[in-house]
Image (cartoon, rainbow over all chains, first blue to last red):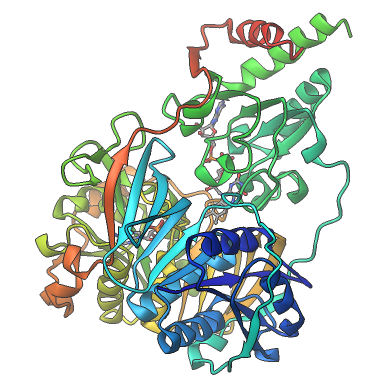
Length: 320
Length: 259
Ligand SMILES: Cc1cc2nc3c(=O)[nH]c(=O)nc-3n(C[C@H](O)[C@H](O)[C@H](O)COP(=O)(O)OP(=O)(O)OC[C@H]3O[C@@H](n4cnc5c(N)ncnc54)[C@H](O)[C@@H]3O)c2cc1C
Ligand SMILES: Nc1ncnc2c1ncn2[C@@H]1O[C@H](COP(=O)(O)O)[C@@H](O)[C@H]1O
């Protein structure tokens, strides 16, 4: 068996999530290689060696500059077909997920997603995941090679093992359709003000607020409690609140003493950003909202009436 | 503009949603509806068709034949017709098999645009479009929160872990929309009545040119080995607001020394 790990980079560093997957892969299979794809990425290969990759394949070309999935599907699929890797692993990200889906189709290779652990069972790779909004856990497998796996963000920490990898350059022959999508404007790191990652109390507003104006309810409660305001992707995408306040897979991972979710459904991609909060309180008018499954106190009700009252009660209590 | 929208019937979220411990497959016998995330894709398809002034919106799905009950909601919203691939031999299809069958059904339609929802609420994969796009040899843009169509090209904004990208592509293309892209309309009474009369083709695997060996469990490459209960988290205390919820929340916070 041999394993290949896709290393996603941003600027001049490899994403921590990818290095975590690499470390885990190395612990299960000493014959683990990595692949780096982009423009000017060759110098990053040495980092991959330090995390235990035996060999690093590098596709370095201007045509691979933009972090778009389809050119990477071309490179990885060809590499996997040539070298016959048994396992191909990706850290889940917007880019990694789209690449994994494409490779699955190109190679007719099974893909298991949302894995939060991997194990070897008598020489066979087994994936561990939860499903249906984390209401059940499953062991999953593959019925043929290569086996593709997408690992949920934050599942594995990178562990430096201090090795060095041999580096092999690979070519970037791209399919016509893979170059049709072009990057017009690539995301830049947003300015950071006071970070929600540092707040001990977070009052999070979701789409259930109904309008951007209703965020004042969140701000009042947060200021009464001495906390900060956070948000979901749905409200950030709608332009109701700024991106740096977003909690979740494509936002911040937070771990406050208290998280209060108001009008937040608790989608899995939001949950992965806040599940380590010490105490979780949620207000939602839908009794079946997934967030109730992981709340210490869940309140079925209308945030529009409950939140202002709560703010007043907190102010009275704190004598302000 | 001819627009295909991929939609899926899913079990309603809630305590009854489960995986059948016998078959290790999703139990689809309870209450079901159209995947809520797909309503955004249907809505966008209708708007793009109307803005173009011509063309049609075709709903394309793989599922049980009774899934038409749910798919009709998309027709009631304003889609023109539906194609449902339904076949005993397709039961239990994973990503490899589903993407293959859908790509075959889509090829037969040769649409200018193929739209997907953000995720299927029973699978949470958010990955099918990438596989279908590869099979169709079309460019793909996912997680779209803003969309502009001009002169035969699409420019879309999407969120990644680093903020927002803007990506452009020519048509035909595969697009997956985020749930914030639009506010799906409610079907009108007239729409609901009219939906029954719109064309609804149920096709077998053979009808879309798929060999049974490439669908269902035979065509799948992943397996479920075993199920186990989740780790429970939190006290999971749940109350209904009877007018006193704010006080109850405060008491809870005081007890935990958080206020
Ligand atoms: C690859 C990927 C990455 C993603 N990354 C993230 C991420 O980083 N962060 C993130 O948050 N999401 C992320 N998402 C999106 C995620 O799947 C959900 O779409 C999103 O979290 C939903 O946000 P929401 O809870 O605000 O909205 P909704 O899901 O629309 O929920 C609104 C809730 O408000 C309730 N409500 C409505 N009115 C009231 C009222 N008056 N009182 C009380 N309750 C009310 C409703 O019952 C509902 O449960 C991602 C998705 C994908 C596919
Ligand atoms: N069986 C299906 N038939 C048609 N479209 C589907 C099916 N399953 C998923 N989809 C589409 O693919 C999107 C993503 O699904 P998933 O990758 O399974 O989370 C959904 O929002 C639908 O648009």
